[in-house]
Image 1 (spheres, rainbow, N blue to C red):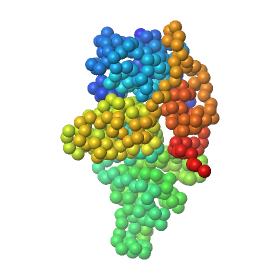
Image 2 (tube, rainbow, N blue to C red):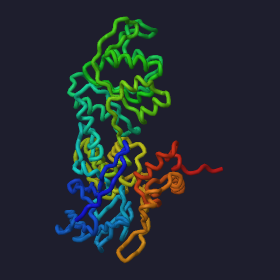
Image 3 (spheres, rainbow, N blue to C red):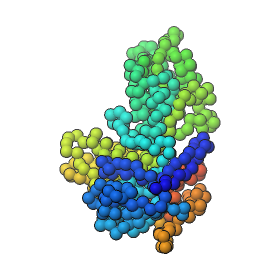
Image 4 (cartoon, one colour):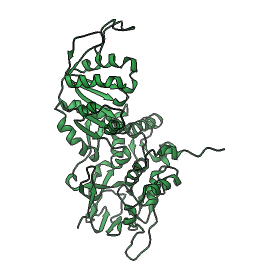
Length: 452
């Protein structure tokens, strides 16, 4: 069967060849990636199906996917346990990148995959830090650069795992010295210089003992500066000098002290923009700009969520047996937007273990309310036709106006899944449109209006 190849613009403006595929993500032993071929693709537990899924909950020929120039449609073939798209049971529904598909107890996500990186799976990067195919592809250049002394910038929203990646870089570097993490937002401005570069006893009021400082503490290892933009502006030239000269001058001293550290810095947004806005010195940015990695938010890594959940569950469970996970819960996790990313997922696991540790299987009903109700019932209608054609007009979907997208999101009270379904685009596409609208606060849209 022929696979439909698409072109997608990359960050540098070039065109990357991609294919749409279904990544089966739950249960884990069925994990696989199947490209969506042109024409009709059969799915079921019959080994003769185009996509064979070994689950006794599936019918022999459970469903069909029809891919034409008009779009992609999934049909139920009168299966015993049904098909679900975006959490709603359907007889037929359109599929786009980001669609969450469940056949009985098997869960998958439609993904757009670059042809040159079609392979790839799930992995434990280091104890407690897990990555799926999307993130693993991005980690390739970082892992290659890790043994060098090249500075690395890690960008990503809060909770995406920036410190975890910094620890992985330190592990891959082979450096024998320690890993030292500094939350720059927590360093008082008056103490910042001494905290970073050290000070001599008696060098200022309250300095009743000497302090080596973070740079010297990380000698031979890695210094991770989280929220680097929160450092006082007065520290930036001194940080630049330490990086250029590979030495620091502690407060109260006049003799420089050599330091050998690998620098990794983190920020929630692009540092280059902060340079343009005047928050970071150009020469400091030029010194730090060795390699940049953007950690995607969890809402753009839907196909990794069940894997991350089960891995965190196993890591957090204090004693066996570890509860099982029902497919309904895994499906619901994929429908949620995760504004606080992996940090929020970790907290949810801890909540479930604290409240339901005596349950053999964790189910949808065990989830707190905001997770349990997220994104359900968001399927656009299917227009009946002789060949099962859908009402999707992909030319219109590609030309959705950002203002219109924002209006639809407001009408859906900030529910991204429902707004994307109404617009007939993927959630990732909607987020890209919203990025063109500066200052959109989705959390504010989700709040109920204040009564007079």
